[in-house]
Image (cartoon, rainbow, N blue to C red; front, side):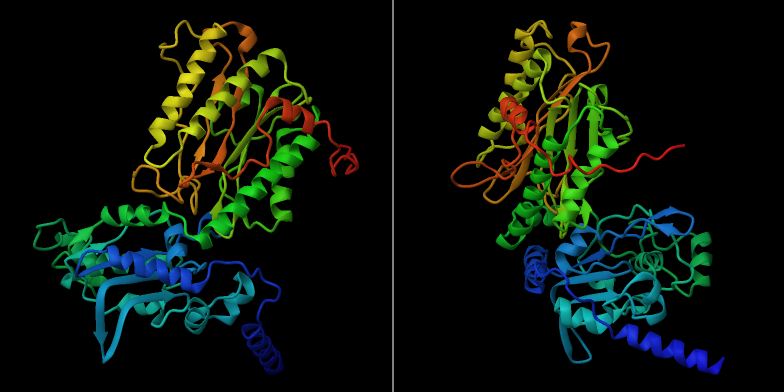
Length: 495
């Protein structure tokens, strides 16, 4: 038994010092993340502090968790990809025991045994070396932090949704970090109240922490500040975002060539996502939408379980996420390679509406202006087809906005400003005619959306996803080409 323990200790020691090989080299740099922290600090009010928490680990079922995805703000400011961490940014320089600092980060502690199961951790030294932080602590040290939050004129953070689990085996998990912070800032005390309720005081007394005052909490400003930063993409960000967009466009191109009427929605989804993985993406930016016929009328349809798309239109709204940055590209194509007259009529209206929306994506305009220009085209087109009775008729054939920012989130943070250079937005008009609509039945079940990712520039809009054809004629031409997957045939699995 003694020899076995010695061997296990040796294996853990070797594992703990082992570095991964052949990792991507095009992640955002530590200088980028530091620059973002400095920019945020310059926007913060005097004598304020901003606190960010890593994303929660989400449980899938029983003892299986979903693949971890970092909170976009936390990643933007740190580059740190692990859970159970806290970032504290001060507007002004602080001093403690003769050491000056204006930011602190608390991270997962190194644990060779857990790393064998759950993956490598940076720890304190790795965070300093790879992410460029000067002052780093293990997460458990935040639980007894001596930060005097009461001394600040503003303590800024995003309010909690409490959608995390308490891992009793980890004393410094997210639940513990959040609860400790709530205690430190007097979160449970209503503003103006001199002390907590007696019941809460008793509960907190068990944990050795009695709250008698409340810090000057601000759960609104930080989101606006982060939105003002994230809505303008830096050159370093644009490299990753453009790659995510091009990968997504390539997925659409390959599916256009591979599409067959006997394919199912799940299979079509799989082709897209295979292309993403082939190019090295880590995730999809959001659940993939592949809706054939009537399914395309469900805006966020994600079941993708129809077994044969047959001769219907197939609406495919998917986006690759590359190193944190996600695209959002939609194409709608005929499964058999040829639009019917009715399908083409609706499709071409949406195409012209999108052109009008893209043309309006210029500096000084906003999403509302792009919607107005696109809606004008859609209403005129639907009126000409007799689907609506006048160009002013209110209807539900386009029930959504057509423009949003993309970046670290598919609906990226912004502060509501009009378009400025180096913003990246989508333009995505659509027409959806579900069965039972108040129009001729020949239009029922037709759903079309076309979505592209548009860079706002001084010289006008640039379509970053233009490699995926948009014109109906170009789509039909591409669908005649041979696909690399045509000869990929799997054995039939008999019951």
